Image (cartoon, rainbow, N blue to C red; front, top):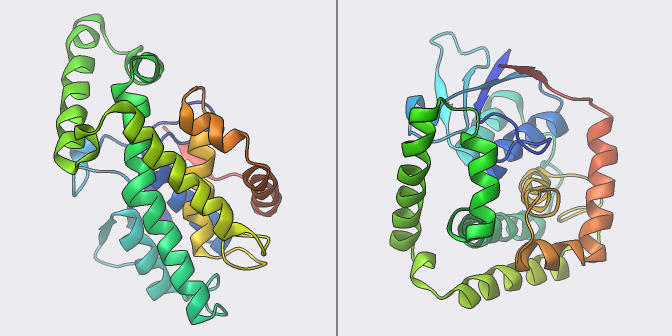
Length: 242
């Protein structure tokens, strides 16, 4: 049994698009697993998700959503992508990188830097902590995120510039999705694990910002999520622990 270590759920989903990406891949690929909540500071790379088990006798731990999927392909074969053309694989790669290396940082800005987004984050992630910890930890974590975003580069931009970058990513994804039912083909592929996770993380969350408004107004995205919901309903919900 694969054990997927990830963040606690919020708003009915895993709030991390990277954790949700691995969940979605496992479900689409038909691989049995258990999802458990963990703390990122205990993770191998101090980030979530990571997996343990998967029939590896030495109890190997695999961290990072991309490396997890590579590992799962190596162990279980490639049921989602084996029939894709080289062009479809390349398109999936570019869509994944757009989500993970650009759109994601605009999402972080909207949630952790914008005051309106931060109030939602603080309530969801820190509200149940003991009072002394709740008085100190949220500010420390928010400052850490701000420093990280500044080091990455998006934190150096003005607000309108950050959101313009994120909206441009969404618009490009919508154009690339036209002409086929799923991310790169007429059946789900590994690219859909990423695309679905990020669109859910933008559209089905209690935030209101230029990213959520642009995505929710896109008929292409809405129809895509409905198709993916139908596919995922065929395999049911994962087993959640903790």
